[in-house]
Length: 200
Image 1 (cartoon, helix red, strand yellow):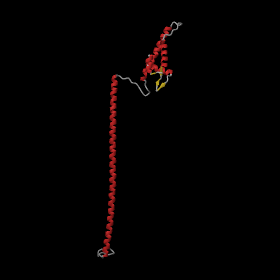
Image 2 (tube, rainbow, N blue to C red; image 1 turned 180 degrees about the horizontal axis):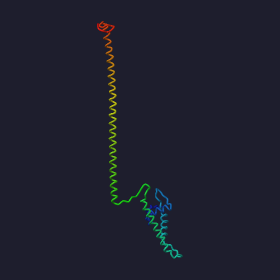
Image 3 (cartoon, helix red, strand yellow; image 1 turned 180 degrees about the vertical axis):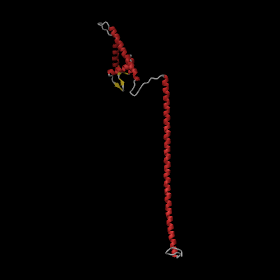
């Protein structure tokens, strides 16, 4: 069994691809991989339908049969043309979030220029934003650096003050001990009075 694409079927039958698609849909032709499985049977069936539609109807009982046949042919021809036009219009189908605008050549050139300018400005703004973020990051890093330096110096100063205080305390204690020894020695040598610590 040979299968034909919609394009091949349209060439074989001398009608548009859209007309083939409409016939496939109407006849409920099976699909595989989103493609219609058009075999010889369908081709012959549709060829017969087209020929029958194009053949004049012989009905001797009616005097206007020739005109009627001509009208039927014209109607069928118009149907085929309509199907073809519908197929062509499908490429211009507009979705809900889309729109079509009509421009003169001058308006389109101006629109294209403005669009290019907008693209350039957008890129410049993105670049400026990157620079600003980099500078902001640098300032934050610098702030954190000086903040850490301040806390470090503060701790060092506190340690120095603590060491000075300990040194002062040690010196004061040593002076106290030294004075006590001197008084004791002076008393032992009877250099000062024991009661009022005044020299004799």
